[in-house]
Length: 118
Image (cartoon, rainbow, N blue to C red; front, side, top):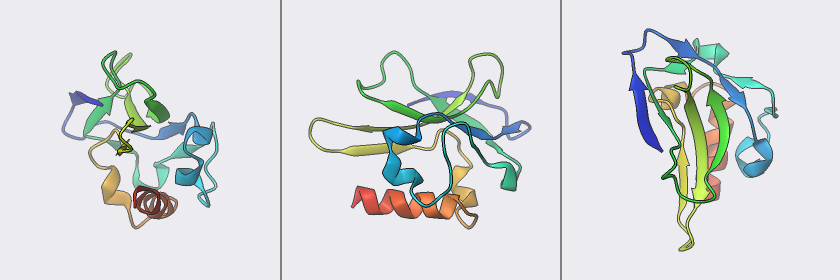
């Protein structure tokens, strides 16, 4: 993941779920499926976005995207990958994602994430 853009929060957007099957443990019990959205309950996400680049590790999976938030191709991407050494790496792709931990289904997603990372 790499920093892509920042607008100090004037634009917010919702994630579109792209590949729940790539990390089924993350989406378990959330009701989120491919084509669904996440973030409307908090007015969307943004402020700063991160996304994959050609230098992203092989096997990096884009799970969800806030499409074109700061212009064409400037999308926030929620990603996950595992290294050959067994490290597990998750990135929400937006700076303010953690601020919605008290809302469902984000709370459930983060519970699933912590359980998977342990």
